[in-house]
Image 1 (cartoon, rainbow, N blue to C red):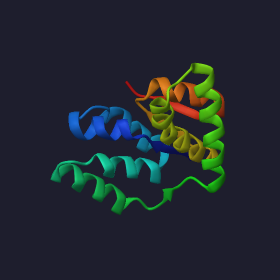
Image 2: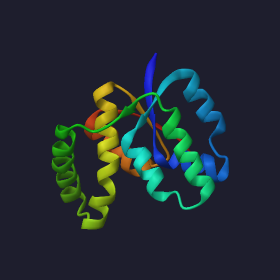
Image 3: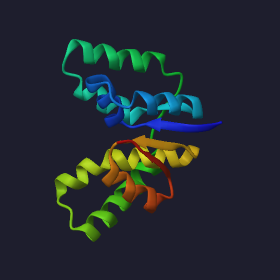
Image 4: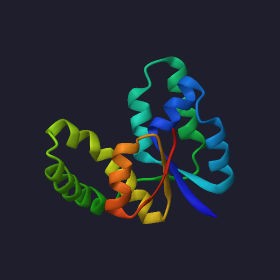
Amino acid sequence: MRWAVIDTGVYIDYWEHRKHDDVLAEVRRTFIVRQSAVVLSELRRGARTGDARKFVERLARVATTWWAPLDEDWWEAGRLIQAIGDSRDWDTNKRRDFQNDVLIALTARRYGATVVTTNRQDFAILGRALDVSVLMVD
């Protein structure tokens, strides 16, 4: 069985708009889903309503395993963001926004996991740069 990490945007679309139900069902059949500590943090940070907080807390509570970036992932993220940001002339804000995506991708790569995401632009770059498997969700 293969591993997968579900990115923040997929959860938000599902919780707020009931999108991707069929894709998530297929992901659960095809993969063992592990939670990214980075994704859980992003979800918690953005949970502004009582219902949203309950969803995030429940997800964190039922997650049997959290995958977190290692020290070397943070170090590599800095190098990668600098290289990609310079090649694309990104400003400081874009580089900062890209950091969590890099950390998610590096963690997934360590476990040989697929990242399930709606963030086509950033994860297309990361899929190529890190040779990490990415499943794009529309």
